[in-house]
Length: 485
Ligand SMILES: CC(=O)N[C@H]1[C@@H](OP(=O)(O)OP(=O)(O)OC[C@H]2O[C@@H](n3ccc(=O)[nH]c3=O)[C@H](O)[C@@H]2O)O[C@H](CO)[C@@H](O)[C@@H]1O[C@H](C)C(=O)N[C@@H](C)C(=O)N[C@H](CCC(=O)O)C(=O)O
Ligand SMILES: Nc1ncnc2c1ncn2[C@@H]1O[C@H](COP(=O)(O)OP(=O)(O)OP(=O)(O)O)[C@@H](O)[C@H]1O
Ligand SMILES: N[C@H](CCC[C@H](N)C(=O)O)C(=O)O
Ligand SMILES: [Mg+2]
Image (cartoon, rainbow, N blue to C red; front, side):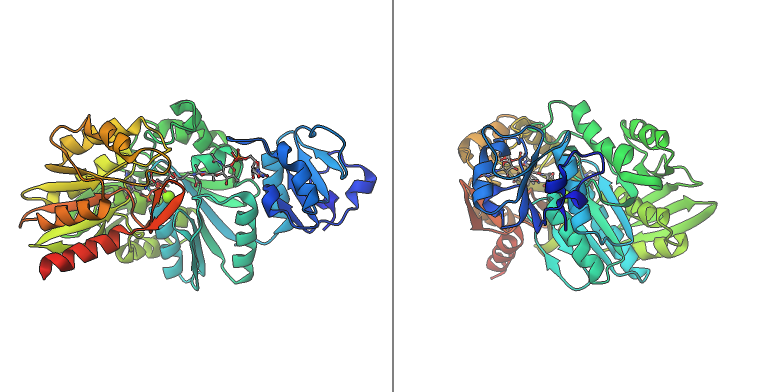
């Protein structure tokens, strides 16, 4: 590919540079291969411009960025006003194939679940379907774990091209606020955007909630294609603002939930817990549908309806879509029932932020006739403000609380636990997560319910820079079999 072909026509490039052959794109000097264009990006920790010499040394044939690096440059420099966006658009040109139908979902909680549900519904409707997000890339034939919820644009466009060539026609993507803010999804042809909810998260990255919401609104303002669909949960304080953003673009609005529009949207008329499932009555386009949703947790109704809306908004037959909800499987580690002791159910959940923890405990209350027990912690090198909030929520909504470690990273784990414990009177402290899980399971009595929150699908405990193998699923299984012996 020629350098010229990577950029929009209004990008100034000398005639000589325009004809350069380009082999690939790189944002990290350590990943540059001979023939690559190096994008020097100013980041949260450092400035890519500092690594231009290293990139050229590694074989970069051109450098792109918003300011030329100091000193003489041995290769052409392409000046860009928005290098992160230009990078994503260049990646879309370098990896041109995409699944025909792409839906993206944002919101503080529920993205992974909605992406998984959307993939499952499409699959049941007969489409080769994939999802990309926190649990990685999942296609009909393979599952590949990735470290980011929304991958960097080079990795993302490479994956889109690869799965399209493998025959995947439908893709559900998670759009994180970091991903939207950093233009990681630009260049993706998004046919439908989904929005679940907004609560406190990532306050270590976004200066305030307005900035956080604005990042999420980029999905509707900038990314969904003209004439595309906007599927918005209508039951929250922020819903009206999101709906306004979608309307301003003239997108086809599908509002869902108790306040959803029963015409174009999906209105939840009634919901009742039925064992580890829920019975729903829905109205859509003048018809009434009965659904048996095989999932625990009221919040999963929101996720299922957003997913249904995304499939309907991209052409799915409503009756087939609602019938497919009866077969949904939860994403791994999202209020997943992993076993029971003395008749008390044990769940693994990914609640690692205040609202998710509140919703998770609220969802499990009907299953705890005696004590609702929670084991959780909070991540190091992440928003410290959420720690006391989560402590207070646990103390208020659970009957027994064990505070433990959850990826302390470079922070002192005891300090993190202390911040939670200060707001959770009566809570016990057991730093070692396996021991905390063993203790909680060992104490379960008939009528209790336990949720082990915060790590969900994760398979490691990050201590310092080391990832120690750890899985709540395995720790719970070991404790359950030990207590049964
Ligand atoms: C804070 C953040 O989001 N950082 C992302 C951002 O990095 P950055 O540009 O700020 O990085 P930086 O370290 O300041 O470096 C600046 C530039 O110098 C380059 N560099 C640096 C060192 C070097 O030797 N050579 C070199 O070229 C870097 O590659 C980078 O381009 O852009 C990178 C490329 O896209 C991302 O990999 C990186 O994600 C980091 C690893 C991260 O941990 N992000 C998390 C917080 C994140 O994005 N999370 C969200 C939400 C999760 C959720 O709630 O579900 C996600 O989507 O996963
Ligand atoms: N619609 C919802 N409303 C409130 N809480 C939810 C909702 N959906 C899921 N949760 C809670 O949030 C946790 C994470 O759910 P999920 O992984 O689907 O969301 P996510 O937005 O992808 O989260 P993350 O940003 O951490 O990847 C669940 O385990 C549950 O505790
Ligand atoms: N994507 C989120 C996941 C947090 C999961 C939790 N287990 C933690 O480590 O805090 C983050 O990186 O902030
Ligand atoms: Mg996720």
